[in-house]
Length: 434
Image 1 (cartoon, rainbow, N blue to C red):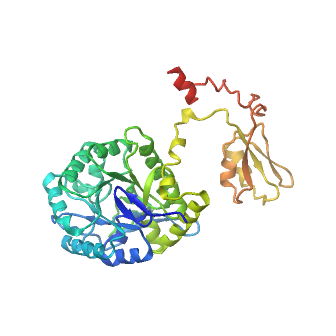
Image 2: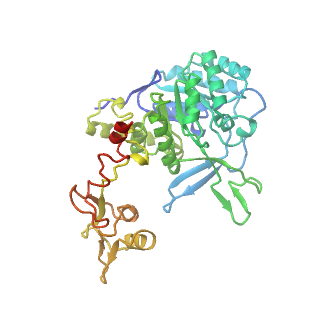
Image 3: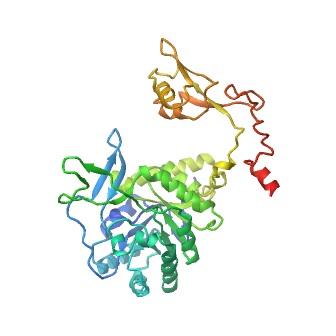
């Protein structure tokens, strides 16, 4: 069987599945239950300094986006960092780590952006025996208004400065958690690397308002008639997270910087996708909050079976395998031509492909009087929309036209578009020209 154990920036864990810093990791009771369920690691909910007290709301803290079947697609939270006393958290962290030495335990930190505050908090956590620290530069609500969280994560100079302090005053490996609420994720990642970070984790939550109460006319969750923006997470943010992870993994300035992937990991497949794009492990929150801690057992068994089928001996065989295939649009092969085809044996004649193509695409699907749907190759641009809206798996597929055939739509010979061997979109041709 494949070996799921990982060593991430020197931190060993029996599998790559960690719980992210969030409500599920707020206390000893939760973390022990998580380890018993099989989680390989935990990032303890963010600790702050003993300054002004952190006080959370006593009303609703979460807003939810549901799918048509009531499945949770995303959660918007307005909860702050831990409101439990620092000394209590530190005592519990030490107790848990003493009993679970084979599991990863990382402490998330957020304090004011001055050197003394960071020096003090690092000194206080030193004897917990935790495996590392994660710098929370991502929370977009509550703490950001106090000059912390994403208020720091949106300024690369601050990221670099604080990371240098942490590396100066701590023996622990340092992970910098990045906010997605920024134009170019590569800039804060580069700043973290310059500051000496051992790794980055991403993404933190997306700044959002999930819904509005149309009776009270206030954002939800609503606290005494008012609402606020919060941090959005869950399956809905996964595409954003995958792109940002890939950007860091393939950028020359950050290539080789270890990444902990976060954002909508719900199944083993989600985890495998993050790892294929360069993440050394993954962190999970919403799936645990939705299904409970034992969801990790399905993740472990699924990833193990997949790796066995692929012949991967360890997670290192998977990490980064998709990165070389992530490119910019200008380098896509314009000679690759496909056409949609409909399997009449699987078609249920619902007409969704026809409606989508006829109204919003290229009028490339014909409907006969007895509702038989066929593709008009001379109109099909292979946009994939029909396949995406079809409710029957594998009913619509895309077939590749062989080189040398004539594309019925353009009248050009497949494989001869603008002479691909010298076309500027061809990476080889571009390199030769340079």
